[in-house]
Image (cartoon, rainbow, N blue to C red):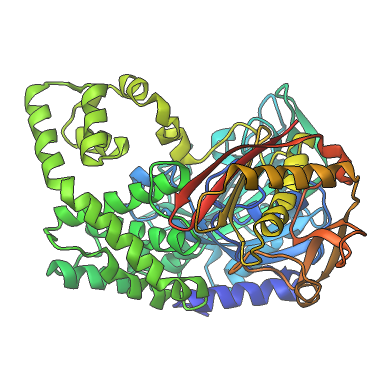
Length: 593
């Protein structure tokens, strides 16, 4: 069976794992609600973090699905045959159920029996072992038993065959990757590093059997999990005998539209066209999930993607606004993601506004940059780089990219000093990593998570506005951040009333209860939920009980957790800041003491 389209591949994958007793889970938002360690959902495992850490999943121990993802760590590689910022990841998970043998056998069966990929074109890699963990001979033996010869099983170091932890501590373990030969002639040996010389990675099985602690020690986990990932775009390229992901049905309509706009032909192999297609697709999905361009965090990543695409449009000779003209071709590729069509007008508005902002200064900024490189033989100073950002809207990464093209350097340390008050614009923020580790499950985080639910309810109560909904949240061990829809700044009196109500409910020692129930029943029971979010057929509902309330509860939310058992555990709730983050969207930052 040769699968030609995205829809075919996803359908067959889900069908296969359903037959293996897996329950299908929906794709979650690109904005993680329960993981403070990343700016975006970068893998299918992110929505499953509480369950990977031991909490029972409502649908059981075997799960499968397709997850939309954003990764910006490889943004400089976008434009080659295999790297993207937005992509879809097929995955199957075992939460303390099957282990290496079953996971590898299922992977091999799907690749060779369902996708009809010849085993002779496959190679696999396993962890070679080090001081922290032994050689993964167990996985290698399974592959060998399935017919993969020893000379196609390669043992590679931790940088190639080890996943995690996401931060300084948490779940992690060896992985076993599957590669397909696309090179010419006799297949070469797999080598360490990113350049696999003719081999394309199409699937990865991660075996989370360790927990790394604060001291850096790797301890065996009580619950061993399997987390797998197969990139939709890469697999489609392999199945269709294509040399790049940009030839597949996930990109062809966008490239065709870029050719029409630029009045140029055969742009599938053009680096600028590829970057435009990838970046505007990513931007459309990010905007659809409620983010707008600005200079902080996720919004900065979005701004950087749009502006990088615009610059490459400039390189293609496109002079007029063009980003909005690509939106309908993107929507046509993904009819199953309803959020794109539902938020089409918002996507068009934000792209057009950002393009207008940047176009006003792009040409002037490029002239200034060209003057700088004429004056400087080897380095652009941090002050000059900061000027390009402040006056002409050039993200620092764009200045670095332009400098690299001209074989000169940027004094990035000096730039950072110039831009100290906007530390979130550093490359660390763009990559989206915090040091708290994979979905920090500390007691402080649990308190703040529970407080966020109470804040959500308190705002509706104090402001007497039932239409108030969560538009985003971020929790670290230090503070909570909560975004919500409201048309104006809150008064000091209103903020004081919100604080007072929450602290009163903390003093009342309200019980926090977790239940599992069908999604329909949860919604009918008046449980709160994120508008537009996709949920599985069975969900966890957290209720903060309150006998004084005629409903029987103070707060009731569909949520994966974690939470405290009683509000008395929270201490004292305090709002430290209230501000605007976008038109009609307010943000509150708060702590518990």
